[in-house]
Each structure stands twice: as structure tokens, then as C-alpha cells.
Amino acid sequence: MNNSDEQMTHNGGDVTQELRLGVNIDHVATVRNARGGTHPDPVRAAIMAEDAGADGITAHLREDRRHIRDADMAAISAAINIPLNFEMAATIEMVAFAVETMPNAACIVPERREEVTTEGGLAVAGHEARLTDLLAPIKEAGIRLSLFIEASELEIRAAAAIGADIIELHTGRYCHDVERRGEELARLANAAKLAHGLGLECHAGHGLDFDTVGAIAAIPEMVELNIGHFLIGESIFTGFPAAIGRMRTLMQSART
Ligand code: PXP
Image (cartoon, rainbow, N blue to C red; front, side, top):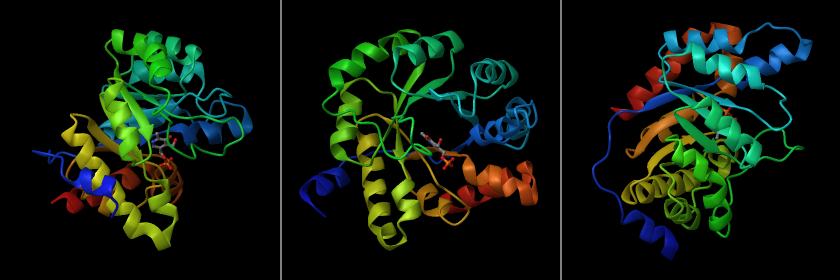
């Protein structure tokens, strides 16, 4: 553990026992778009996820509209009775879109056109002034500001400094680098503690599945997990409600 990791373990306070599941429905739209029609409908998936016990719906309107499209976002927002977490790049176009849609939260993610998925966390440190200006309309509209970042003390402190309400920690490396999983888990746990100590709500996501969710769910400061690709894939075999139900059970049992 280096100095900054050590400092990270010294923060924290009372922690919540409630852990929310946000279901990311992007890849329902990926399948729909493969044939250019209307089936499967991400709005129907969002309603089904809500009925199956999801605590929130997450959707990412990418610049290239490869899965979720403008009309989907508005339709999902209108159809659900649980919070919408609008994932978006830090661009003027997306900020305007978020303010028009008025989701519960806007989760700012880095976005590169050539990437297959969101490959890393947002660089907040060093870009504080630009992000504060750009994201001001989101804060002014009363939308909760969430920043998708790596489990780094520098980034967490920068997120707090620019007035984020939430950080979402990128769990990609923890999920995919099996050899370094223990190390990554410790980093995520320390990061969650630091975030909580700074008054930030802590979420996590990316690459989580039935095998990897438990250890993340057991981090006491964690408030929400956002999970998509695995749930959509698993629903081919067991159905969407069953996949969501099992994920919730695993999260709950890890918590207790
Ligand atoms: N959280 C964020 C910020 C993401 O960008 C993604 C991927 O779109 C997820 C969670 C969900 O990741 P996955 O689809 O791998 O479960």
C-alpha cells in the first residue's frame, strides 16, 4: 500500500446498508439496431427491469448513437417510475440533451469513437475548470452529477472539488484482470471509503457478472451497482427478470 492508499483508508463514517441495482439496457438497443427495426425495444426492457426489481435504469446515449438513440432516451424516461441514470460524454450537445431529458442523474463518461465500450475512467484532475463550466447546466437543473472515474485518490478528490454528487468507480480492471483482482478490489474498497468520507455517493460498474458482483457488493460504502452487458447476455438463457432477480439476490447476500 502506498502513501496515498494509506490516506484513503483513513476516511469514512457511517455507511448505508442499502445497495441499489441500476440495470443498463444499452445492449437491448444494440440487438435492435443490428437489424434496423424496432425489436427488441429498450423501453419494454426498461419496464420489465423495473418490474423485476431494478432500482434504476441506466442508458448511454453515445455520440455515434450505436445503441441508444435520442428518441429512446425520452421514451425510457417517460415510461419508468424509477430513477434514470443518463450516461453521456462531456460535450455541449449531451449537456443540453440531459437538461432537456431531466434524468435523476447524469453520469459523465469518457468516450472515444473507436472504443468497443467505455474503456477507462474520466480524467477529472487537470480538467476541473473546463468540466465545472461545461457541466454547470446539469447542476443548475437539479440533475445529480455523477462522474465515472478510476479508483484513484487524485480523481476522487477532483470529483469532489468540482461538486459531483456521485462517483461511479470503474470495475473493468477488477473484473478482467484475474491475476490482479485482489489488488484491484482493495483499491476499489479504499476508494469507496475515501469518497464516502468526502460526502460523495459511491457507485460502481463495468463488466460485473454473477461471479464478480459479490465482493463489490460487500464494500459497505457502495450505494449502487450499474450492470448491463452480462444481464442482457444472461437473459438469453434464463430470461431478463430471472437474471435481474439472481443478481439482486447475490448483491443482497453479499451485503448481509
Ligand atoms: N457504468 C458505466 C459508467 C458504464 O459506462 C457501463 C457500460 O456502459 C456500465 C456501468 C455497465 O457495464 P456493463 O455493461 O459491462 O455491465
